[in-house]
Length: 472
Image 1 (cartoon, rainbow, N blue to C red):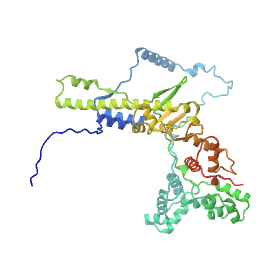
Image 2 (spheres, one colour):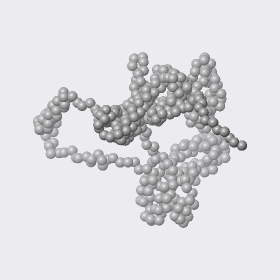
Image 3 (cartoon, rainbow, N blue to C red):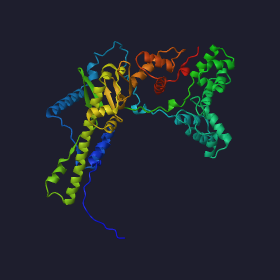
Image 4 (cartoon, helix red, strand yellow):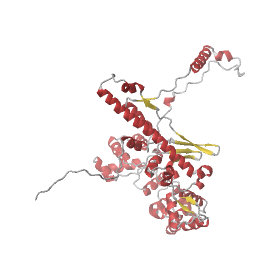
């Protein structure tokens, strides 16, 4: 059977999304912070010879003359012995004062600067001061290296012994030594052991407080204080006394030696109030101002300069440089539009505070500025806005909400703030349940289900009412 093939032309209409190089670059730049963008631009300047930074303005002749005059005046003052000139006027009346007395020279500043030791360094220093045996020091080093940031030992004794391998009794001996170091409670294998090590350090080993921690930890965590008193034969006052001691113990003794490094936020957008209006200023501090190099640009205008290969290279780099400059400009314009829309929607928050924060979703801003939601999502990622109310991440302004009985849209952040204030003002002996909080919010015109209140309370990291109840 023969199969016939026929060639022909046909037309077909279809839709396809084609990302041009310039569009791809613009999308890549959108989610970057100001610092990250500065790094990208500096890297591009190094790789693309057609890009160069705009030189800073040179000082004027008048400014140079003023600076020279200032320097000349300072040189004249250096030639005058000021102390000798004013010594008669600086006499304090004590003629026994010796003029040769001098203020002792302070140590240089570099000798006063130090880096706070971490938990490993702190414990190893103590271990070397306590032990001279090299084998014990080796095992101790293995134990300390397996402590987490809270100071708890996350490896079993068997696992430590297999590292050497080390004899089990030697590992236990080294662990006992480390558990006696500062801070008290370090190298414990669980919370119970951590608290009991601290009680032993206080001389309370075997006391009712120690027994309460040893035998009633689960009841302590669930605040079943009357049951603990009944089982231990203690009065409510005695239970309260021992609880006060336990509350002063540190469940994470190593944390103070493992502080998180401060994270400095550089706002990408500044909102400044001018009269009754708010002005948006993009933060371009630290961003290099780029332009196309005039030298390389002239190579394209003069055909005699360089060969065809050189001209093609310059054209390619010129195209790449223009894409970058256009993408950066588009990024800044988009951030400005999104920020402007956020200010329009959240004007009440800027004027009156968090209680006037409106529900806002990405779709609202996208519709307002005529862009896609994904574009708005990229813009608000990892960026901060400095407002008269403080510095906030752009995502802070986007929240769901509910409609009150009066038909007003209320942000979930505002509701969480109300819940937090209710709990802060509650009677510690009769804390508010989630159902009671829902009733109080309902009386204020905010219809919320109990499970919604529980969800918001958990997001605020507030324990339930049975764990907030204080001992009578």
